Image (tube, rainbow, N blue to C red; front, side, top):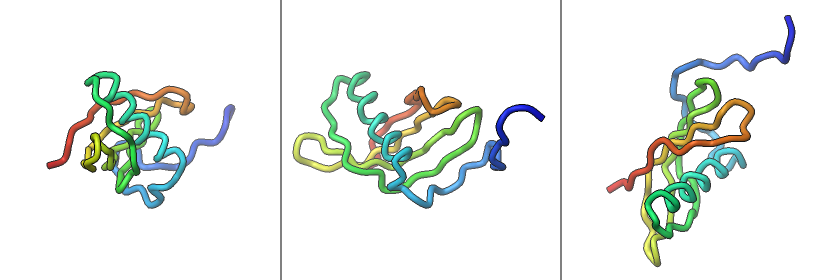
Length: 99
């Protein structure tokens, strides 16, 4: 066999993220807020990821609950970010406020 060994992972299934402080997870959350700000012309400030799930699909999908500031009030948002294979490129696929 050629190439690097693949990590064994359940393809297609959502799994809880046990370490929401992981730099990759935090980066995905920050990216989601930045992208939403660009698309919606808002000025949300990323605070933290409060929980999340990941899914392995030609890269990784993250479904994250994010705390962000809108002016002086904190709100929670549900964002989905797809990190393409290799981790160098990301795409925001969903972003909505949790009521």
